[in-house]
Amino acid sequence: MGRTVRVLVVEDDEDLRVAVSAELSAAGLDVIAAADIAGADAALRAHPFGCVVFDRMLPDGDAIDYVHRRRGDGWSVPVLFLTARDSVADRIAGFAHGGDDYLIKPFSVAEMAARVRTLCRRAVGRPSVLRMADLEVDCARRTVRRGGVLLTVSDKEFAVLEYLAIRPGQAVTRTELIEHCWDASADPMSNVVDVVVKRLRRKLREPELIHTVRGRGYRLAEPAG
Image (cartoon, rainbow, N blue to C red; front, side):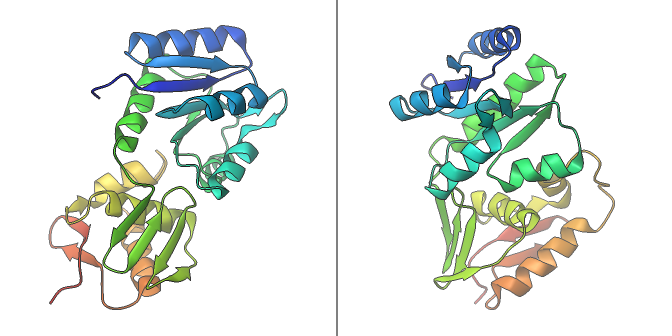
């Protein structure tokens, strides 16, 4: 990833905080640790970070509320939530409130480090607002505008559109979209991707920006013609 990337680890369990910090340091990342939201907020205002690893339930509140509030202010640093909450509703809430990834406890610290490095790479050099023709995808505020008009999209629709917008002009397979925008229980043989893309096309209106790549999947590109 070039220059050393700084990562913030926010975890109130000291043993887990030390273990996570050690694994990330061994992966070549510059780690700062905090035990609560207040400490995290102070660190975030003092230093730039490539990613934040947030335990959800902290002594001074649920980190999801803090992240949601900061996203509303345009904060775009990628966030990986750690939590013992393993229901689908909890995972959806994490993504809906500005999380970029979600890891259920207990977890492999090696897998956690790999996910953090992926989030850091994804964030390097990427603007918080992605544009294609008259489409604007605001990754920080998680909003979509077409021709300056704010559109109402679901969390899943935003995830698919953001993934396509990060790769303008590139063909993205249905399998890639399922792997990155759905949880592990999604059936790769189902038509869930096509259903979401159909809804997105209807909401984005003409001229069409999401194009079908026959035998491959979809790509986000300038209107044909």
